[in-house]
Every structure is written in C-alpha cells, then in structure tokens.
Length: 327
Ligand SMILES: [Mn+2]
Image 1 (cartoon, rainbow, N blue to C red):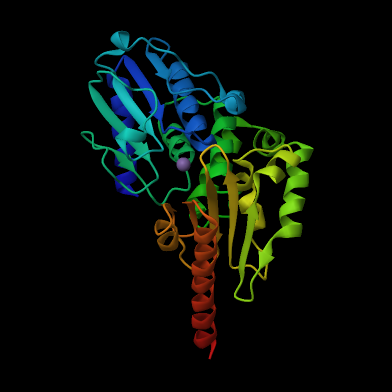
Image 2 (cartoon, rainbow, N blue to C red):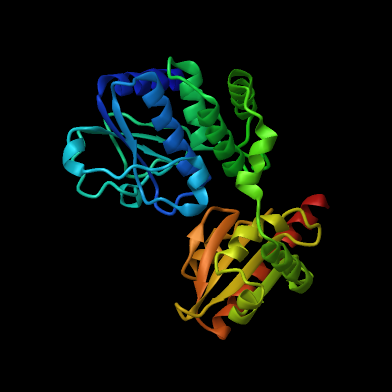
C-alpha cells in the first residue's frame, strides 16, 4: 500500500515537472485503453491549463463516445514526457513512431515486460488501468469532472467484465464508490455505451446457443462457416465479442468458437475456460493468451479436428482430477 502511494506521488510529480505530455496506449484498443488515455489527458488539461497534453493513437469509430484523440507533429513534442497506459511492451504502443521523448512513464495492470523508464507504476493486482488512473486522480490534486469519471467507470466495468473477473477486489469497489460519490455520475445511464448492440448480433448469439456441440467431458465447440457470418450480417470479430456470454453454463467447462476467415484462408479461434488452463493448448495451434482466455489460428479441417480432440482431452483430464479430489 505504501509503495503504491509512493508511486502515485511520483507520477503526480512527473506530470507537474513537464509542460509537454504525450499519452499513448496499445494498438487495437479496448475501452480500458481508450478511456484511461482520454481521462488522464482531460484531467491534466483541467488541472493545468498551461500544459500541452495530448492523447495519441489510431482513433476507433465505435469508441468515439469517450472523446477525440489528437493528431500531433512529432517535432513539436520532442523532449516530452511520454506516458504509456495499459501495455507492457514497447512494440505494441500505438502512435509514437519517431517521437523523441525525454522520458517514458508506464502505468499498467499487466505483468511487467520490456518497457522500463526511470520508474514505472505497475500494479497487476488492479482490475484495469482505469482503476489506477481513478486512484491517481482521487489521491492527488488532479481534477475530476463528470466526463472523466464516466470514462473511468466504463473502463473499469469493461475490463473487469462487470466485476465478474477474479481481479475485481475490495479496492476496486472502494475506488468506484469514491468515484461515483465525488463525480455524481449517473452510472446506469452509461451502460449503453458498452453494451448496446444490434438485433443481428443478438440473433447470431441465438444461432451459437442452438448449434454449439457439447461433449460429455464439458467441451463446447462450434465451427462457424463464412456463409453463416454473412447470413446473420455480422463479422469475423463477432464470435470473439460474444464468447464471454457463454460463461456460467453448467454443462460447459471450456468453450471455443472456430470461425472461417476466407480472406486469410484460415480459422480464427477463441477459447474460454472456467477451470482447466487452455493457453498451453492454444500455443500448440499458433496462438496463446491468458490461462483462461486464449486465441489460436487453424488452417485445415484436420487441424480443427486435432484441436477439438486436444481441448476435449484437457476437459477430460480436468474432470477426472476434480472427481478424484472429491473422493
Ligand atoms: Mn486493461
């Protein structure tokens, strides 16, 4: 706790020390990445109107609610403080090519990798980067307004999957409670920015539920041909966006969607688990990821069959071990 407070002090001091600040996050951003960079930028601007603070990276139209990102001339920001959020490796930082920064400061909740500044604030017990930015703002003179608080709230809700994921802690709830108390945001009104979707997607979710095969070992799987993606008017990313919605099905321990990707002549695979570790299997099939949430790529029908067999074996072994634990 003391160490974290110390980090917060150091981060605040760095922000005070620099007049030019560039904030960046990972490529292919999610709401936590986008919301954290815009919230921190807006808070710095509000607190220190004399500073020149920008948030960079490719803008994503579906996230435009959070705010507009800045296009910058690298020359103008030479010798800036670069703050990178929600990403531990430098090659995945978006929008900082050829930027000659003076110093890099990382704030992140993923385990440490190669980014190393004079110091960085890494807290892999935090559910999200937005939780860390909220803590920073609440514990320093950095200012908060309704828009900043709303962005931070959405980042926290999104990365913790509505407080379902195990790295949601009492600290998360404390910070969220303080955030709401201080900003008076009308938080139930914000959920549509995360969860609104069209009827095509809802119907496609029905298709998955109706067609998913479930083995006696608890593996749920579905191969989705390109023709079905077209028929339901969804896209290649839709199955992976929906996969978390198939959690908490009693008969299913591990579940995977294998979607035909015609353009890349392969199959895009998403896998989730609420028991056995699956990223080792994923890494045998051109993929990887977290222990319980992974992805892979398959190229042939034979590979699909082997992959399903391997995952089913993982489920079988897990089931066997759980039964013998009970005995
Ligand atoms: Mn995150």
